[in-house]
Image 1 (tube, rainbow, N blue to C red):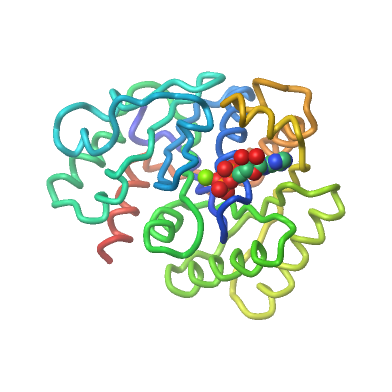
Image 2: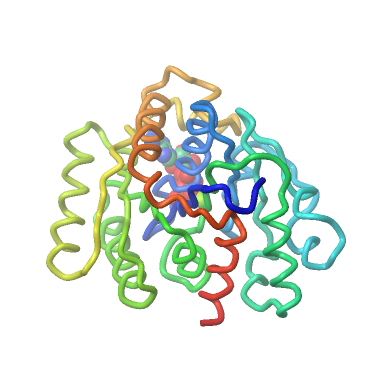
Amino acid sequence: MGEGAPINVIAVSSGKGGVGKTSVAVNLAVALAEAGEAVLLFDADLGLANVDVALGLKPERDISAVLAGECTLAETIVAGPAGIRIVPASSGVARMASLSASEQAGLVSAFSELPGPLDTLLVDTGAGIDSAVLTFASACPEIIVVVCDEPTSLTDAYALIKVLSRDHGVKRFQLLANMVDNELQGRRLFDKVCGVADRYLDVHLGYLGHIPRDDYLRRAVRQQQAVMTAYPRAPSAQAFRRAAVRVQKTLRATAVSGGIGFFLERLIEAEHG
Ligand SMILES: Nc1ncnc2c1ncn2[C@@H]1O[C@H](COP(=O)(O)OP(=O)(O)O)[C@@H](O)[C@H]1O
Ligand SMILES: [Mg+2]
């Protein structure tokens, strides 16, 4: 991967858990890969339902081994469907907040020196406004906020957007409505969040569209597969394909030209700044 190659760095976040963040991260990654992109999915969520569980992967090493000098970052990567590459979650993610200067430098160069091309880095950040989520999300130039049609999902999404904009200088957000009955319901969720955000916050909210509530997605989760590969014609799989096209159209503008090391530098600055 060239140092200067522009890449998209996108956080997938949400106000509350269980709204489909990991499902979105995994399936969007696959949809982008099927559209020809080289995708790296960084699982930065320490919760239970991790990307490796969602895809039935059994990672042997994680970032803590990289930090301990026992292996390279490339050796932690596991292959997912459609050629996506995954950096698994671990307790090492929490430790990233308290690295020594030489460990930081090592990690930045480890990400920068990952072999192979890279177009998009997706980061599953976990939910809510705890510091790890805020740190990872604010290091990404683009943030997808996943919402569903539950009052707490909307109020918690608003709280996340508020804290990120007020305390972390984040001004751009993309909403994705998940588990909705139809297009109109998704649009209404976006309008609700947008209405309040426009009134009280200085932010730009874009809309990435909706993913329908889909039993095929549930079934794919039980089979530890992406719905994109298990049931490519399912309604949710088709919706992920449409969302990927929107991601490519709207988020290209903010591609970072410093390569992936730039993301890590921002991450470390955010943690210590
Ligand atoms: N579009 C959808 N249609 C039906 N069920 C969904 C959809 N998205 C998510 N789910 C269900 O919600 C559960 C939680 O999703 P998950 O991606 O793990 O959420 P999060 O990462 O936000 O906690 C999944 O296991 C799945 O059963
Ligand atoms: Mg999750």
